[in-house]
Amino acid sequence: MSDTEDRKVPDAEPGSEDSRQRRKKMWIVLAILVAGAIIAALLLSGGEEEAPFAATDGATTPAVTVLAPGAGTLQGVINATGTLAARREMPIGVVGEGGRVVSVTVEPGDWVNAGQVLAVIDRSVQSQQESAQSAQIEVAQADAELAQANLDRALQLVERGFISQADIDRLTATRDAAVARVQVARAQLGERRARNAQLNIVAPAAGLVLTRNVEPGQVVSPGSGTLFSIARGGEMELLARIGEAELDAIDVGTQGTVTPVGTEQQFTCSVWQKSPVIDEQTRQGTARCALSYDSALRPGGFASIELASETVVAPRLPESAILSDDRGSYVYIVDSDNKVVRRPIEVGSISDEGIVVASGLQGNERVVLRAGGFLTEGEQVRPVTQGES
Image 1 (cartoon, rainbow, N blue to C red):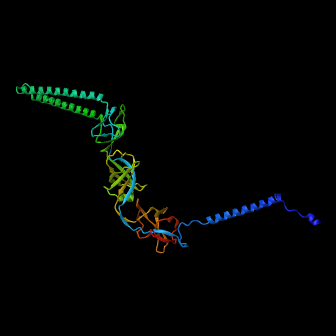
Image 2 (tube, rainbow, N blue to C red):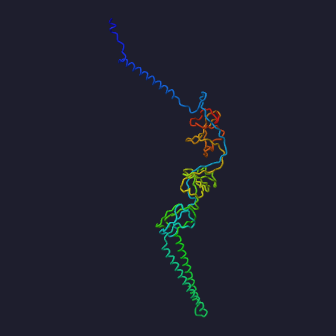
Image 3 (cartoon, helix red, strand yellow):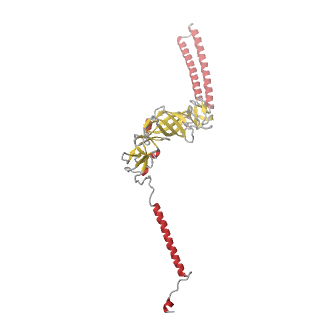
């Protein structure tokens, strides 16, 4: 054997350390290649955003759906909210002298008639005063009868010359004074009885008791304030807060539909008064809408109202076509050059059929129905009329 053959390096045996190192390097390289392929695929798939408008046949101009809404005669509707209240609320307090309350005969929610007793004040002292006044009438009446008898006797003696005419005049004056004292006593008794009657707190008119602020045993006086409040005739009203411009479109007598919050019941009302004053902060006025009595109508409650206003000739658009920003409401229309143009509008009433455009559109414009938020003014588009395939 030569020296060269003696120095030849033997091949790595299977399972040796060198063999394992080579296999490990091959797996690392393979893993790096696979990871790179996955990353490249993700980049290629996510590198482009989906265009908000469909471009067909390779065209770069976005297609948008447009509609010429036209103009129709529409019944104007004004929607508003407000607070329920008694149309004519009557506060009731102490009219007479006052005193300790003996009994209270009604509760909030009761219906009362005119003159019905609501509460009774103790009158034990006043009853004794009434008896004394009644006795004074009898005393005055006796004095008057005696004075009349003396005058009659004097008249019989004056013809015989036993009594002078001056005595007759004096006796006549005495009789007249006694008769006057009878009238005074009777008037004083009538006053006392009237004061005693005021110790009964009564309803001035028929209606619904709204509040009660008195209890038996309480001492009340004319300065005690309102003890009861009554809605005269049970009539209610809605104090609807309506915008300045819309208030002018409502006439007295306009019919409306009221829906109290928390219920699906609806009630018919009629505008009987419009506020002559507009709030400087909210630019709103109040329309007072009369309602007939119903137990579901509670003063202080919140309700919505729908009022019929004058008919208008205007376009109507779906909600998706109307946009708004800090400059107000607007729509995008497509002009004759197929470019997007911003058109400011004024929104009218809202219903299930759409939104009425009170001003800003004639009805023959091509209005962008959807995706207006993705457009910019002056952009070139390809309009597609709604309903076309």
